[in-house]
Image (cartoon, rainbow, N blue to C red; front, side, top):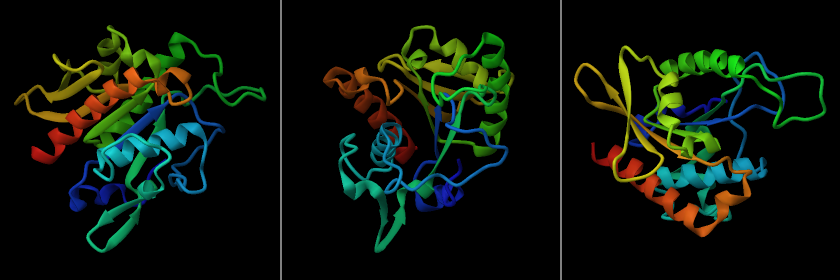
Length: 215
């Protein structure tokens, strides 16, 4: 899912932000526009909007109820927020004959193979900030899996020493930071709305945002 203004983000002085979830609700063979935040009101998308709005400095909080964050204010211009980011999913092959659209069965082989697809997507999208919406991204060994999203010969993923579930993608040639990576729970997980989790998530968002705007 690619926002039509995604590649204008840096011209607007804002980061290119990519979210990655688990699987889509239906199979597709093509890239499609990101859905409008106004009309798409499921829990996953509301939380995605809240995080994106904070990263783009449209709010100081992660509040999916704040309707002001449907737009990005650029001087006198209003740009629909949903056009300014990209959303992909880890699994590109998890579909089967089932009425279920989430939590479909998967295997380690599927994870590894789909990781190669995501890697190619990220090479094209070149995000400044990459948000992983999956509980595994909060675990101590997450860095091993995050590294698989990127070319290991060119880039290294390093864990932030001060903030949990925050990572930096560095160019091995000059050690420059290419991307900030934020681990989050999936927005459908009830625990992602407790106060302690929200505080830690705000710290990650603030650090990522500050890095981009002062670099």
